[in-house]
Length: 239
Ligand code: DQA
Image 1 (cartoon, helix red, strand yellow):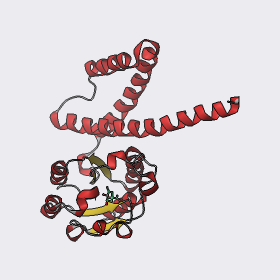
Image 2: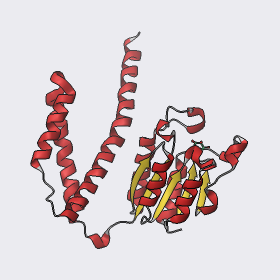
Image 3: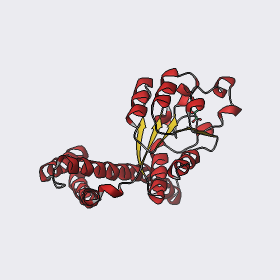
Image 4: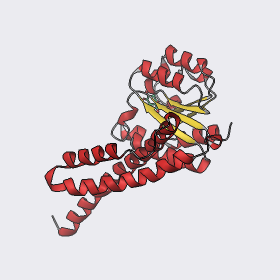
């Protein structure tokens, strides 16, 4: 293989790794902030030196002998960024707490990017969530994310989000037959927007029926990952 092709191929692999790494980093920081909020509620300090030591130690053992030192350095850098975020979250005035929107995805949506990409596109769920988070940042709202392949877990996630400003829900195939998810939506006060990546009305007959639409605030289908962003804007705007 000519040298240039080889370089291109290696760089492509690195780009692909970064595309997975960065959303994971963003998610880690986001969860760190939530940890700080819980610490504040329970009266614990932000800094937990013992836990940081454990995290660095774990990074070394996962990376192994060759990369252990570098993994430790990377983890220390992440911990320092995360501590700065935590301190901010810790000091945040509760009165100015941002409204929260919960994003719930159902069965097989954890496979996005690999699952029938001609229909569902090439973005992974982590990438879609990272896109939602950056939009949320601009809109001044907070998002949390949940995915499950299990119907009952989706019901519980909807119940848990009852106090949210809104819920964005792609219930996947459960959309078409789950009375339990419909009842959960009807039971909570938060407005729910039903989202589908594909235009379910232009597909098989059975996908035209939604058990959920009648109890949702609105439905967005056919715009791929952008549908989640549209739903976020609608909910953040109070619509
Ligand atoms: C989907 C459409 C559903 O019919 C299907 O079962 C899914 C994904 C969509 O996002 O287009 O899993 O909800």
